[in-house]
Length: 348
Image (cartoon, rainbow, N blue to C red; front, side, top):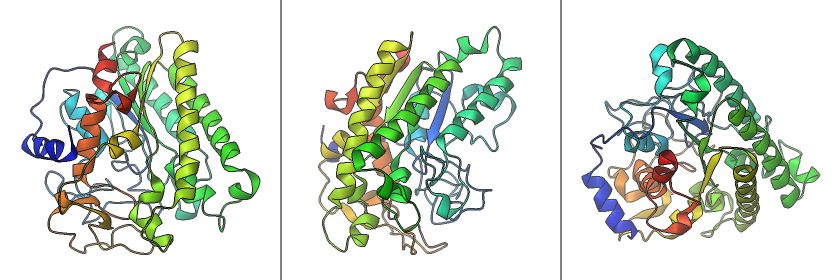
Protein backbone atom coordinates (compact mmCIF):
# COMPACT_ATOMS: atom_id res chain seq x y z
CA UNK A 1 0.00 0.00 0.00
CA UNK A 2 1.60 3.31 -1.05
CA UNK A 3 1.65 6.58 0.80
CA UNK A 4 -1.39 8.02 -1.01
CA UNK A 5 -3.57 5.02 -0.20
CA UNK A 6 -2.55 5.10 3.46
CA UNK A 7 -3.00 8.88 3.51
CA UNK A 8 -6.58 8.69 2.24
CA UNK A 9 -7.43 5.70 4.43
CA UNK A 10 -6.21 7.39 7.59
CA UNK A 11 -7.95 10.64 6.80
CA UNK A 12 -11.18 8.67 6.47
CA UNK A 13 -10.68 6.85 9.77
CA UNK A 14 -8.95 9.45 11.95
CA UNK A 15 -11.83 9.43 14.46
CA UNK A 16 -10.61 5.92 15.48
CA UNK A 17 -13.61 3.88 16.47
CA UNK A 18 -12.26 1.89 19.40
CA UNK A 19 -12.09 -1.86 18.85
CA UNK A 20 -11.54 -4.68 21.28
CA UNK A 21 -9.09 -4.02 24.09
CA UNK A 22 -5.85 -5.72 23.01
CA UNK A 23 -3.84 -4.89 26.13
CA UNK A 24 -4.82 -3.35 29.46
CA UNK A 25 -2.00 -0.81 29.53
CA UNK A 26 0.57 1.10 27.49
CA UNK A 27 3.80 2.48 28.98
CA UNK A 28 5.79 4.92 26.89
CA UNK A 29 9.45 6.02 27.01
CA UNK A 30 11.37 8.35 24.75
CA UNK A 31 12.15 11.86 23.61
CA UNK A 32 10.22 14.73 22.04
CA UNK A 33 8.66 12.45 19.41
CA UNK A 34 6.72 10.76 22.24
CA UNK A 35 6.56 13.55 24.88
CA UNK A 36 2.98 14.52 25.79
CA UNK A 37 3.72 17.13 28.44
CA UNK A 38 6.41 15.88 30.81
CA UNK A 39 8.57 18.89 29.90
CA UNK A 40 5.84 21.47 30.48
CA UNK A 41 6.96 22.32 34.02
CA UNK A 42 10.71 21.91 33.43
CA UNK A 43 13.13 24.79 32.95
CA UNK A 44 14.04 24.07 29.34
CA UNK A 45 13.74 25.44 25.83
CA UNK A 46 12.55 21.98 24.75
CA UNK A 47 8.85 22.34 25.44
CA UNK A 48 5.81 22.58 23.20
CA UNK A 49 3.00 23.80 25.44
CA UNK A 50 2.14 26.73 23.18
CA UNK A 51 0.38 27.22 19.86
CA UNK A 52 0.76 26.39 17.02
CA UNK A 53 1.68 23.02 18.59
CA UNK A 54 -1.58 21.22 19.30
CA UNK A 55 -3.58 23.23 16.79
CA UNK A 56 -5.25 20.03 15.53
CA UNK A 57 -5.36 18.21 18.87
CA UNK A 58 -8.92 17.69 20.23
CA UNK A 59 -9.96 21.05 21.63
CA UNK A 60 -7.06 22.82 19.85
CA UNK A 61 -4.97 22.44 23.00
CA UNK A 62 -1.22 23.03 23.13
CA UNK A 63 -0.42 20.40 25.73
CA UNK A 64 3.26 19.61 25.25
CA UNK A 65 3.13 17.43 22.13
CA UNK A 66 5.74 18.51 19.57
CA UNK A 67 3.33 18.29 16.65
CA UNK A 68 0.06 19.72 15.40
CA UNK A 69 -2.11 16.88 16.73
CA UNK A 70 -1.61 13.28 17.81
CA UNK A 71 1.73 11.52 18.29
CA UNK A 72 2.57 7.97 17.20
CA UNK A 73 1.87 6.67 20.70
CA UNK A 74 -1.50 8.44 20.84
CA UNK A 75 -2.48 6.61 17.67
CA UNK A 76 -1.11 3.29 18.92
CA UNK A 77 -3.06 3.68 22.16
CA UNK A 78 -6.27 4.04 20.19
CA UNK A 79 -5.42 1.09 17.94
CA UNK A 80 -4.88 -0.96 21.10
CA UNK A 81 -8.47 -0.22 22.11
CA UNK A 82 -7.51 1.84 25.17
CA UNK A 83 -9.92 4.69 25.86
CA UNK A 84 -8.59 8.26 26.14
CA UNK A 85 -4.92 9.24 26.23
CA UNK A 86 -2.01 7.94 28.27
CA UNK A 87 -1.13 10.65 30.79
CA UNK A 88 2.36 12.05 31.36
CA UNK A 89 4.19 10.88 34.47
CA UNK A 90 4.09 14.43 35.87
CA UNK A 91 0.27 14.44 36.11
CA UNK A 92 -0.83 10.76 36.08
CA UNK A 93 -2.56 9.68 39.29
CA UNK A 94 -4.64 6.95 40.87
CA UNK A 95 -6.51 4.59 38.57
CA UNK A 96 -5.16 6.47 35.51
CA UNK A 97 -1.88 4.63 35.92
CA UNK A 98 -3.60 1.28 35.36
CA UNK A 99 -3.87 2.00 31.64
CA UNK A 100 -0.28 3.24 31.42
CA UNK A 101 1.99 6.22 31.88
CA UNK A 102 4.04 8.29 29.43
CA UNK A 103 7.58 9.10 30.65
CA UNK A 104 8.98 10.62 27.42
CA UNK A 105 10.84 13.92 27.64
CA UNK A 106 11.81 16.38 24.93
CA UNK A 107 15.61 16.68 24.32
CA UNK A 108 16.23 13.57 26.45
CA UNK A 109 18.72 10.95 25.35
CA UNK A 110 20.15 7.65 26.40
CA UNK A 111 23.16 9.48 27.85
CA UNK A 112 22.31 11.78 30.78
CA UNK A 113 24.18 14.78 29.39
CA UNK A 114 22.44 14.80 26.00
CA UNK A 115 20.29 17.89 25.55
CA UNK A 116 21.58 19.52 28.74
CA UNK A 117 22.44 22.78 26.94
CA UNK A 118 18.69 23.26 26.40
CA UNK A 119 17.86 22.83 30.07
CA UNK A 120 16.20 20.17 32.20
CA UNK A 121 15.09 16.86 30.71
CA UNK A 122 14.35 13.32 31.85
CA UNK A 123 16.93 10.98 30.30
CA UNK A 124 16.33 7.27 29.81
CA UNK A 125 17.68 5.94 33.12
CA UNK A 126 15.58 8.49 35.00
CA UNK A 127 12.49 7.55 32.98
CA UNK A 128 13.04 3.94 33.98
CA UNK A 129 13.36 4.99 37.64
CA UNK A 130 10.10 6.92 37.28
CA UNK A 131 8.50 3.72 36.03
CA UNK A 132 9.73 1.95 39.15
CA UNK A 133 7.86 4.59 41.17
CA UNK A 134 4.75 3.91 39.11
CA UNK A 135 5.05 0.16 39.72
CA UNK A 136 5.02 0.75 43.48
CA UNK A 137 1.98 3.01 43.19
CA UNK A 138 0.11 0.40 41.16
CA UNK A 139 0.28 -2.26 43.89
CA UNK A 140 -2.88 -1.12 45.77
CA UNK A 141 -4.91 -1.22 42.53
CA UNK A 142 -3.84 -4.65 41.26
CA UNK A 143 -4.99 -8.04 42.51
CA UNK A 144 -2.05 -10.37 42.91
CA UNK A 145 1.58 -9.64 41.96
CA UNK A 146 1.84 -6.39 40.01
CA UNK A 147 4.32 -8.04 37.62
CA UNK A 148 1.56 -10.39 36.44
CA UNK A 149 -0.38 -7.32 35.36
CA UNK A 150 2.59 -5.58 33.77
CA UNK A 151 3.52 -8.71 31.80
CA UNK A 152 0.40 -8.08 29.71
CA UNK A 153 1.16 -4.43 28.93
CA UNK A 154 2.73 -2.90 25.83
CA UNK A 155 5.91 -0.90 26.37
CA UNK A 156 6.84 1.48 23.55
CA UNK A 157 10.24 3.19 23.25
CA UNK A 158 11.87 5.70 20.91
CA UNK A 159 15.07 7.33 22.09
CA UNK A 160 18.58 8.12 20.85
CA UNK A 161 18.03 10.95 18.37
CA UNK A 162 19.09 13.59 20.88
CA UNK A 163 22.29 11.70 21.61
CA UNK A 164 23.22 12.63 18.05
CA UNK A 165 21.44 15.94 17.45
CA UNK A 166 22.08 17.39 20.90
CA UNK A 167 25.34 15.71 21.83
CA UNK A 168 27.60 13.93 19.33
CA UNK A 169 27.06 16.39 16.47
CA UNK A 170 27.21 19.45 18.71
CA UNK A 171 30.94 19.61 19.57
CA UNK A 172 30.66 23.21 20.77
CA UNK A 173 28.81 21.87 23.83
CA UNK A 174 29.83 18.22 24.19
CA UNK A 175 33.18 16.37 23.91
CA UNK A 176 31.67 13.09 22.68
CA UNK A 177 32.89 13.37 19.08
CA UNK A 178 36.45 13.93 20.27
CA UNK A 179 36.27 10.91 22.58
CA UNK A 180 34.41 8.38 20.42
CA UNK A 181 34.37 7.51 16.75
CA UNK A 182 30.83 6.81 15.42
CA UNK A 183 31.07 3.06 15.99
CA UNK A 184 32.32 3.51 19.57
CA UNK A 185 29.62 6.05 20.34
CA UNK A 186 26.88 3.77 19.01
CA UNK A 187 28.29 0.92 21.12
CA UNK A 188 28.27 3.10 24.24
CA UNK A 189 24.65 4.08 23.60
CA UNK A 190 23.54 0.51 22.99
CA UNK A 191 25.31 -0.74 26.12
CA UNK A 192 23.38 1.77 28.26
CA UNK A 193 20.16 1.08 26.34
CA UNK A 194 20.52 -2.62 27.08
CA UNK A 195 21.00 -1.98 30.80
CA UNK A 196 17.80 0.05 30.97
CA UNK A 197 15.82 -2.53 29.01
CA UNK A 198 16.98 -5.18 31.46
CA UNK A 199 15.88 -2.95 34.33
CA UNK A 200 12.41 -2.61 32.77
CA UNK A 201 12.30 -6.38 32.38
CA UNK A 202 13.06 -6.75 36.09
CA UNK A 203 10.08 -4.48 36.84
CA UNK A 204 7.72 -6.68 34.81
CA UNK A 205 8.02 -5.48 31.20
CA UNK A 206 7.79 -8.31 28.66
CA UNK A 207 6.25 -6.92 25.46
CA UNK A 208 8.40 -4.05 24.22
CA UNK A 209 8.20 -2.30 20.84
CA UNK A 210 11.38 -0.34 20.11
CA UNK A 211 11.47 2.21 17.31
CA UNK A 212 14.73 2.61 15.44
CA UNK A 213 16.00 6.10 14.69
CA UNK A 214 14.91 7.81 11.50
CA UNK A 215 17.06 9.59 8.95
CA UNK A 216 17.82 12.56 11.18
CA UNK A 217 20.10 14.05 8.53
CA UNK A 218 17.08 14.51 6.24
CA UNK A 219 15.08 16.70 8.62
CA UNK A 220 14.52 20.33 7.57
CA UNK A 221 16.73 21.53 10.44
CA UNK A 222 19.74 19.43 9.43
CA UNK A 223 19.33 20.25 5.74
CA UNK A 224 19.27 23.97 6.52
CA UNK A 225 22.27 23.73 8.85
CA UNK A 226 24.05 21.76 6.14
CA UNK A 227 23.37 24.69 3.80
CA UNK A 228 22.29 22.36 1.03
CA UNK A 229 19.24 20.71 -0.47
CA UNK A 230 20.64 17.31 0.38
CA UNK A 231 20.57 15.28 3.56
CA UNK A 232 23.44 15.33 6.04
CA UNK A 233 24.80 11.85 5.33
CA UNK A 234 27.37 11.99 8.13
CA UNK A 235 24.55 11.95 10.66
CA UNK A 236 22.58 9.34 8.72
CA UNK A 237 25.56 6.98 8.62
CA UNK A 238 26.09 7.35 12.37
CA UNK A 239 22.41 6.64 13.03
CA UNK A 240 22.58 3.57 10.78
CA UNK A 241 25.35 2.16 12.99
CA UNK A 242 23.14 2.71 16.03
CA UNK A 243 20.16 0.97 14.42
CA UNK A 244 22.26 -2.02 13.37
CA UNK A 245 23.54 -2.48 16.91
CA UNK A 246 20.04 -1.97 18.33
CA UNK A 247 18.72 -4.88 16.24
CA UNK A 248 21.52 -7.10 17.55
CA UNK A 249 20.68 -6.05 21.12
CA UNK A 250 16.99 -6.85 20.67
CA UNK A 251 17.76 -10.27 19.19
CA UNK A 252 20.09 -11.00 22.11
CA UNK A 253 17.57 -9.96 24.77
CA UNK A 254 14.87 -12.09 23.15
CA UNK A 255 17.17 -15.10 23.48
CA UNK A 256 18.55 -14.42 26.94
CA UNK A 257 15.63 -12.96 28.90
CA UNK A 258 13.05 -15.64 29.67
CA UNK A 259 9.63 -14.61 28.39
CA UNK A 260 10.89 -11.38 26.81
CA UNK A 261 9.16 -10.42 23.55
CA UNK A 262 10.91 -7.40 22.06
CA UNK A 263 10.36 -6.19 18.51
CA UNK A 264 12.15 -3.61 16.37
CA UNK A 265 10.18 -1.06 14.36
CA UNK A 266 12.21 0.02 11.33
CA UNK A 267 11.38 3.69 10.98
CA UNK A 268 13.60 4.05 7.91
CA UNK A 269 11.91 1.18 6.09
CA UNK A 270 8.51 2.73 6.76
CA UNK A 271 9.69 6.11 5.50
CA UNK A 272 11.39 4.63 2.43
CA UNK A 273 8.27 2.71 1.40
CA UNK A 274 6.22 5.92 1.30
CA UNK A 275 5.44 7.60 -2.00
CA UNK A 276 4.24 11.14 -1.21
CA UNK A 277 1.26 12.36 -3.24
CA UNK A 278 1.64 15.39 -5.55
CA UNK A 279 2.00 18.61 -3.59
CA UNK A 280 3.15 16.93 -0.38
CA UNK A 281 5.95 19.01 1.17
CA UNK A 282 8.83 17.04 2.71
CA UNK A 283 11.38 19.88 2.86
CA UNK A 284 9.73 22.93 4.41
CA UNK A 285 8.32 23.30 7.91
CA UNK A 286 4.62 23.87 8.52
CA UNK A 287 5.30 26.50 11.18
CA UNK A 288 7.67 29.44 11.24
CA UNK A 289 10.70 28.26 13.20
CA UNK A 290 13.00 30.07 15.61
CA UNK A 291 16.77 29.56 15.80
CA UNK A 292 16.50 26.17 17.55
CA UNK A 293 14.06 24.99 14.83
CA UNK A 294 11.05 24.79 17.12
CA UNK A 295 7.91 26.72 16.21
CA UNK A 296 7.72 30.43 16.91
CA UNK A 297 5.04 30.89 19.59
CA UNK A 298 1.55 31.93 18.50
CA UNK A 299 2.42 32.33 14.80
CA UNK A 300 -0.24 30.65 12.60
CA UNK A 301 1.04 27.47 10.92
CA UNK A 302 0.49 26.42 7.31
CA UNK A 303 -3.24 26.15 6.51
CA UNK A 304 -3.17 22.49 5.39
CA UNK A 305 -1.06 20.44 7.82
CA UNK A 306 -1.99 17.24 5.96
CA UNK A 307 0.27 18.30 3.09
CA UNK A 308 3.42 18.77 5.22
CA UNK A 309 5.75 16.08 6.54
CA UNK A 310 7.26 18.31 9.25
CA UNK A 311 5.61 20.59 11.76
CA UNK A 312 8.95 22.18 12.75
CA UNK A 313 12.60 21.50 11.99
CA UNK A 314 12.67 18.05 13.61
CA UNK A 315 9.15 16.89 14.43
CA UNK A 316 6.68 15.35 11.97
CA UNK A 317 3.08 16.37 11.52
CA UNK A 318 0.19 14.25 12.72
CA UNK A 319 -0.42 12.75 9.28
CA UNK A 320 3.11 11.30 9.28
CA UNK A 321 2.55 9.86 12.75
CA UNK A 322 -0.73 8.31 11.61
CA UNK A 323 1.05 6.56 8.76
CA UNK A 324 3.97 5.37 10.90
CA UNK A 325 1.73 4.10 13.71
CA UNK A 326 -0.48 2.14 11.34
CA UNK A 327 2.54 0.60 9.60
CA UNK A 328 4.04 -0.40 12.96
CA UNK A 329 0.76 -1.80 14.27
CA UNK A 330 -0.11 -3.92 11.24
CA UNK A 331 2.93 -4.29 9.01
CA UNK A 332 1.85 -4.75 5.39
CA UNK A 333 5.56 -4.99 4.56
CA UNK A 334 7.61 -7.43 6.63
CA UNK A 335 10.68 -5.19 6.39
CA UNK A 336 8.90 -2.72 8.68
CA UNK A 337 9.31 -4.90 11.77
CA UNK A 338 11.62 -7.52 13.30
CA UNK A 339 10.31 -10.02 14.20
CA UNK A 340 6.62 -9.02 14.51
CA UNK A 341 4.34 -6.00 14.29
CA UNK A 342 2.75 -4.49 17.39
CA UNK A 343 -0.64 -6.11 16.84
CA UNK A 344 1.02 -9.53 16.83
CA UNK A 345 3.25 -8.60 19.79
CA UNK A 346 0.38 -7.75 22.13
CA UNK A 347 -1.35 -11.01 21.24
CA UNK A 348 1.65 -13.23 22.00
